[in-house]
Amino acid sequence: MATNVVNERGGEQGETERTTETEPETAVETDCTVTLHLRSSAPAAATRRQRTVLDRLRSLASDGVVPELRVERWSSKVTVPSDGDDGDRAPVELYEEFETTAERADARLEPFFETREAVGGLLSAGPPTDRVIVFPVVCLTVRRDGDLTGLYPCWKDGDHHSVEDGLSALATEPGDPENL
Image (cartoon, rainbow, N blue to C red; front, top):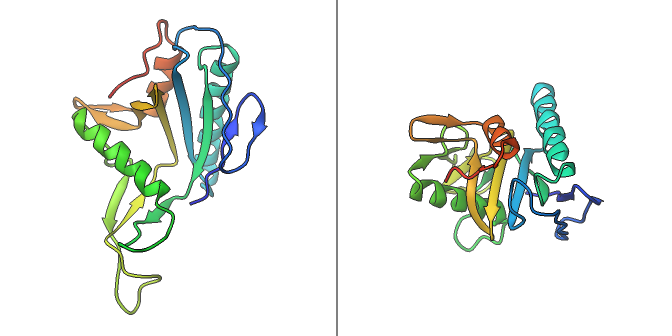
């Protein structure tokens, strides 16, 4: 899964290069990083939603509300590499971090993130593996000092925490987007 990283202050960066720019302390503290994960090759309606969320985050970043904004693109799904496979483990590790953090916070990723058994055998496309992870069209994460503290979308305490809820939490004074 290729990841495009965009520094909202300086344009698109290389796949592994990341830059950090911070604004003076405002509603969200400067040790906070907001990352917008967008599914690449999304349908037209989903692309419009992605654009709307990205425009809102860019506005919050230009107002100094979001001190560091990253944009990453992920595939719609990834096959979990089997043991010994040298495939790209980064998306799997990211999902596993989401899963572990959500579990500790008594939150759920389903139905926004989906995992299912991979098809194996003679008629399958590719090697047999344990599972496939399906990523949402748009996802917003908040990290404080590198620790995942906010994840949208998810279910927590019987409530749906949507990406739009995350945007509202970022924009609200005193801005507490942490839901995990």
